[in-house]
View 1 (cartoon, rainbow, N blue to C red):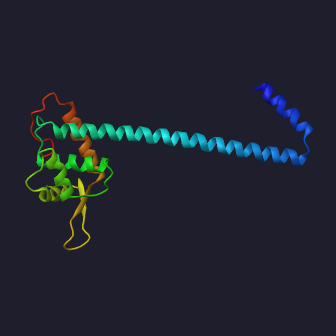
View 2 (view 1 turned 90 degrees about the vertical axis):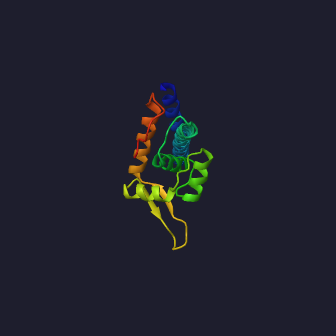
Length: 168
């Protein structure tokens, strides 16, 4: 580092004021490019870590939904299904898509719409509708997301899988 400082000092003694100004501008641009490169690498690493967490969460929810030893209530199935769809990238879910997902795991409740309405009253979900005859869409609220994390923790840490509902 000391040698670099010495060389830079000698170079500046041999440059005109205009050359020195251009050199300084070039070094500033190289510095900004280096900072941008480091910021990009940090953001890419953070995104990769986020993708890894999302993949692990998807595997965890899939494992719980797929394991029939977990005796999930309708509310738990709907919450976990919504969480699963959110991890897949869906901002909002409708009952048809949720029922298809839950049916695939043999977890479809008798009346998904009624469960969504109940979870909405508990402030765990929010619903929206674009018209009188349109399908309702819904999504987890922050409280609903916290509750899903609680349910996942309870189910994942439980030594006894053959258990009754965590939610109801």
